[in-house]
Each structure stands twice: as structure tokens, then as C-alpha cells.
Image (tube, rainbow, N blue to C red; front, side, top):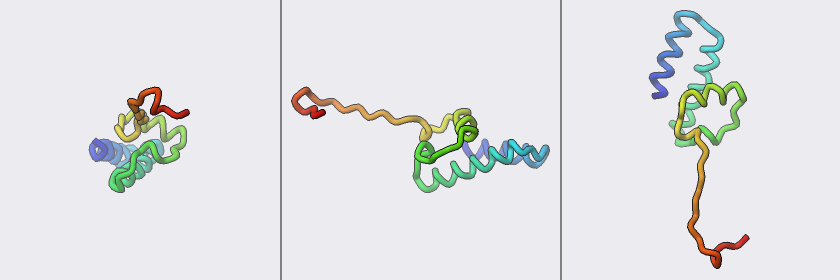
Length: 78
């Protein structure tokens, strides 16, 4: 999915040379590096503008994680 997105962004950069497309490509490259390193996208501190673009991409590793634990009252220690 990321490779297809990057190809589309590169096409826009080639045809129109838009600054916004270049910014998107920088974010996509950072995401690609993180995924290749086995890190989750949510683990990096992103700028607000970056987060807006990331939210449009629906990366699973960008989603929050919820851990559920099934314990009884006796096992629970506050």
C-alpha cells in the first residue's frame, strides 16, 4: 500500500513539482524506514501536519493499542 502511495506522490512531484507532494514524500519515506526497521508508526513523535496526512493513509501500526486483561478482584492490585 505504501509503495503504491509513494509512486503516486512521485508522479505528482514529477508532473507538477508541488511542495505539498514533496512534504508527503518525506513523511512516506520516514514511514517506510520505520516499517522496514519493524517499528510502529505510532511510536514516533509526528508534527500535526504529518498526523493529518498519516490519518488519511490508515496504517495499522498508526492505530492506538488497547490491552485487555481478564483478572479477578483478588488478583487486581491498585
